[in-house]
Image (cartoon, rainbow, N blue to C red; front, side, top):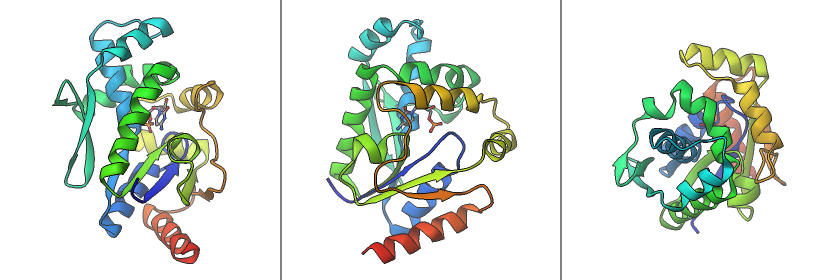
Length: 211
Ligand code: C5P
C-alpha cells in the first residue's frame, strides 16, 4: 500500500472537491469510492436486478465485471471494461437506489478489493464513507469532512441534482456493514462555512504538523 489520505463524510459535504484538489496539489491520484457503488447500482438497475432484494444484489455482484483505471490522476470506473458516464452515475434513479446496493456485504467486498488495489499502485486521496474506518484503517492521514444538512442540501441543489441526501445519510449511517462513521483518529472539519480551498488548506496544515 502506498500513502493514502482518507476523506470520509456524509453526502454533499464537499469531500469530493476537496480530495480532488488535494490530489492535484500533491501530485497524487484521486479516487471517488462512491462512484464504484454508483456504477454497480447503475449496472444492476440496467440489468433489471431488484435492488430491494439483498440476495439478488449479492448474486449479481458475484458476476459483475467492475474495474477502474486512472485517467489523468482521476479514477474512472468501468463495467465490463467500459467507462460509466458520470451522468448515469448521478441520475435520480441511482441516487435513490445506491444506499440499498451499498449495504450488501458482497458488494462492499468487491468494491473494497478494487480500492485497495488502486492504493497498491498509486498514492491516493480517497473519499467515501468507510475509507478511514474499514478500507485503510492503518493510514495515519484520516479526515472527516462534515457540513450542516441545510448547507449540503443547498450544494446539491446548486448542482441541479435531485438527491434525497437526508434519507441516504440515514441509510448509510444505520446499516450493519461498514456504516458511515467518524474513523478513529480522524481530524474532523466542519465545512459549512468554508470554501473548498479553505478546507484543503486546513488539511494541508494538519498533514505538515503531523509529519
Ligand atoms: O459519495 P457518494 O454520495 O457519491 O456515494 C454514493 C453512495 O455510495 C453513498 O450514499 C453510500 O451508500 C455509498 N458509499 C459507501 N461507501 C463509500 C462510498 C460510498 O457505502 N466508501
